[in-house]
Amino acid sequence: MVRLRVFLCTYRRPTLLRRALRSLMAQTFVDWVCELHNDAPDDGSPVAVLREIGADDPRFSYHAHDRNWGAVATFNRVFAGGPEPYAALLEDDNWWEPDFLASAVSALDLHPTASLVWANMKLWQEQSDGTWIDTDRTVWTWGSPPPPLIELCTPEFYQAFDALHSQGAMVFRPGAFRATKVPYLLPLSIIEMARERAAIGPLLL
Image (cartoon, rainbow, N blue to C red; front, side, top):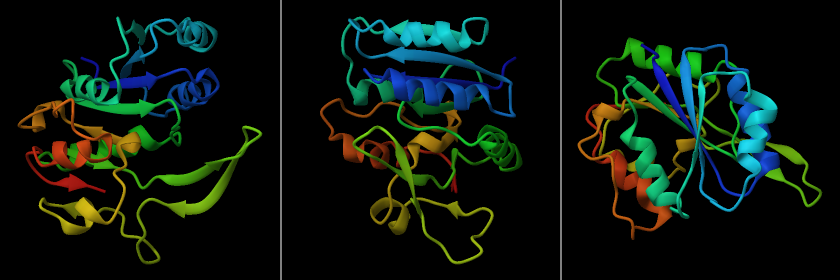
């Protein structure tokens, strides 16, 4: 069985989607399948990008939503996962280092009670001309050198209130959550805080 299902979610950003898609195809870990979810039913550009970059790759499937689901409903679908033991969310404005999936899957393999693992995301800033600049900052800040792995057991004050949630650089076990859905009316900024309270087992960074 395939070990990981990637949910690549996009909404009217074909240029960014190309970058995200190429970063997935460049992963050193190759035991994955990917659902490309288009949340703009009237926009045909995502399927065109998929045909352009991944047309001959049988690991991809295309899912045009019947209506605009919005971010909360789309993320709820992601956390429901699939038959694979692991799942990951790749949003169209993020991209992964080539060894991201290999490192994340290895961490979960070594910690069978953990619900998910995050990578510390690098922060880039988009310019008005469409180029991107590396800010030389990360979501999480630690001492130097940073620890190779940090285990967070909820409730964790720092994780809950003092840092962004790196959902765009995360691999998780869909079966390790008491609930995979959050209420649709919940503000987007706190849905991961709410969902992570349903995690069974520690969170790894």
